[in-house]
Image 1 (tube, one colour):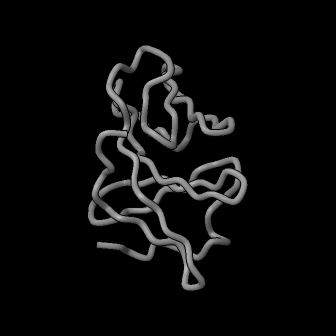
Image 2 (spheres, one colour):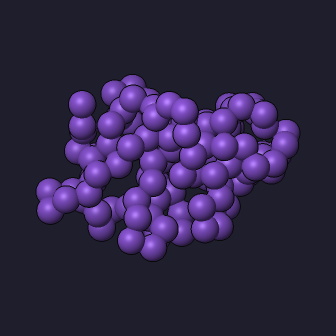
Length: 106
């Protein structure tokens, strides 16, 4: 199932914006020409991950510095040990669409 979340112009470059999609807080950001979607909750302490610093494909939690790859959800730095959920994104003339089911096995 795909849900239209926003117009492409509403998705920031170099920062994240949070949308509620099917009851989930999902952060969207643009890196270059690509749009990425990830869960807005640090798996270390449930902090607001989208408020963190984004450098390339890496988001850093503003609370304790855990880092995650926004493409895969993979943990890149402690104290987190559990990956964040990432979501499939599609962009077309109508806007930015997100599949609200987390991708598995990435």
